[in-house]
Length: 328
Image (cartoon, rainbow, N blue to C red; front, side, top):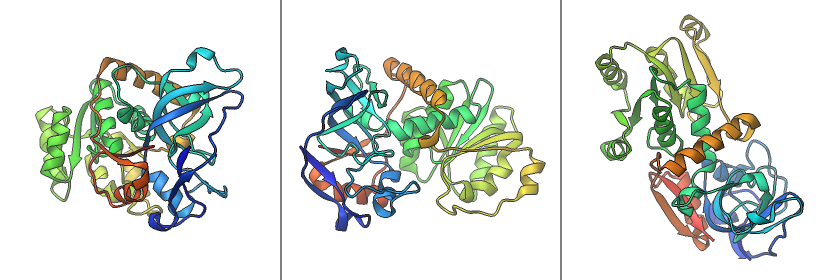
């Protein structure tokens, strides 16, 4: 089969290769998926570049956690009727050498989730890390009827889903964006937004005032360190902060007294260590939303597998608004 791989960590143009590799056979409890589309996440890029937080000890790695395709073989203990099933994939390269950047991948059957009819493989390949993270954020933020939730980065892969999910759970949602183009993308999905920057709190308070509120009940954040000052200003006493990244500063100094005075509840989230019962709830609810057509999805920017270097560079440089994928 054709696959992308790297034998050492480093810059994309130096380490990523595409070539022929033996096709895998599913072991007990596994399925083999014929991969139609392989999704690329920032964590895939970080793992390729540095080995990632968990390390990457294999002599050869096929990258990417997420993807979508069709099951074409099942291992011992897996229901035979799963063969032929359209599925989306998540966490395929977690603690394993082989991810989805190949024409086929073998994974534990639970990681291959049925993809509802009418949902494309391109959309399915972009679910995994972003959609599960978004659900986790909305859950930890306490999104519910009557709540006002602020979502930073509302057109990012996670923020776009998180804003919609919080609304589907009954909350009133305001997103932040960087420019007018992003605002248009958010509006098309029914997400109201305000521009990022120094004037954001003032614009957010005006939005709150229209709803008879002075503060947000929760914020969902893609940069804990970078947005903490604004969150402290905008969150209600007892408010919740659900954060899934802090790229500005991974080890920020915490204003403990200010956090205490506001009685804030901070949740730091990582989908890869998300408790299994929560992940099962997330997948069940996500499946229902997908079947109902309740979600808008990020724009897909597809590259052939042979151009995986350019695809990785596109993720690193944030060349596109939306989801970057490769097609094996």
